[in-house]
Length: 155
Image 1 (cartoon, rainbow, N blue to C red):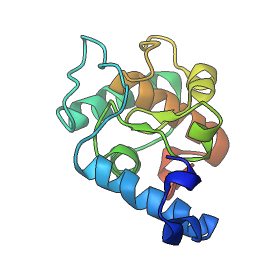
Image 2: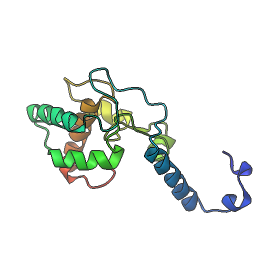
Image 3: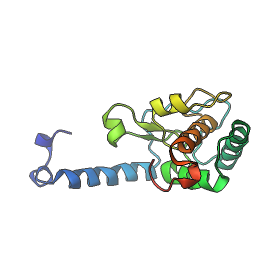
């Protein structure tokens, strides 16, 4: 909606208040289970929200151990639940990355360039694939922060 079409009171709001209001609306959409234009996860993994979070984490941990990527179940789950509430089809269409045309996607809210750079061989190239998303995000976190266990907010 353009500013000119908005009520005068909203048009006088500061940019910060508008962003906060947008974040509240985005949060409400997530709570309502709305996912915008996200393709389904690969057929190899169920796409329902929270469906197999434990299995996805454990599969990723197995691959991570084989590839020498640090991380624990607790660190992955904490970040995954904060970022997507366990929805492998989650997509963020409102933050600064989305404004640049590269929204964060999947369980650990990874942008396409980061997923491509830190993709782990042997996993799907589909960013919405839960195991591929977790493993790539953990690989990124390992390079940037030492481990996904060291990530305590958006990263």
